Length: 115
Image 1 (cartoon, helix red, strand yellow):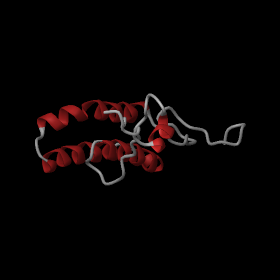
Image 2: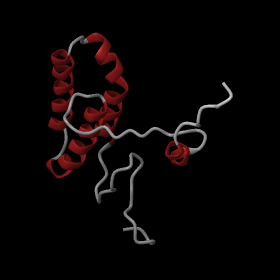
Image 3: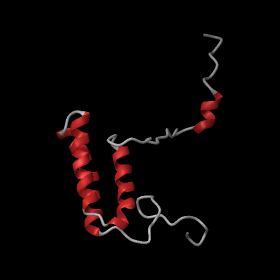
Image 4: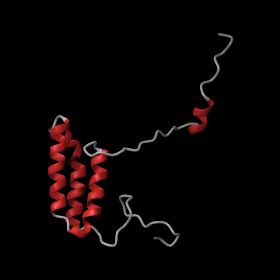
């Protein structure tokens, strides 16, 4: 917990743990995330991309110490969900430039009766 009673968070928005992920594992995770768009181009079809993802996912987990496995799995899970290769909900929200939700509640303007 931080000094205001909230959770400490690391740079990727997940709760900070007592042990940091080693640099070599963090670098592999970052490389995988940067590579995902290229994986989709090189592996057409859902099964091909899922297989390529699984190979990289398993290789990263194999080099992860047991005490850090849950943290690494959660980071990989978020990447997988974002790219559609793991089950989970992708949360997206539409942000309106003008008016926000209040503009949506008002509905469409009434048609001009003079037309």
